Image (tube, rainbow, N blue to C red; front, top):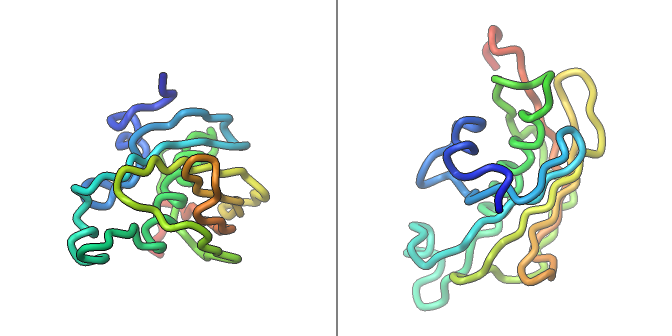
Length: 148
């Protein structure tokens, strides 16, 4: 049973097909941590060119998946409800396992620091409990009245 389904996710973050990389939220502790699922299928558009005959999920899209999970974690806190979280920085990104069609990507995000309209999260994307990607992401939640 999921905590949030795809429709509820789309109520929180602005991402839509083909750039929505989240199927459900499995666990959510607002302001602390989140675990989400991305089912990787051969129907993903990026597999047409990455790589023909050897489909591999691009690392940048794994990072994007983690950023979307982080956005949900951030936007479920009372302070940021109804706003948009933007990715501000990617630190210490490491890719350890290839992600292929048929894999179930589990996205684990933990809040590390939060101050004013910025924060830092620690992330891991796992396939079968093996870390495929890890990174620290910085987010910014700007005042919606100001253009960034």
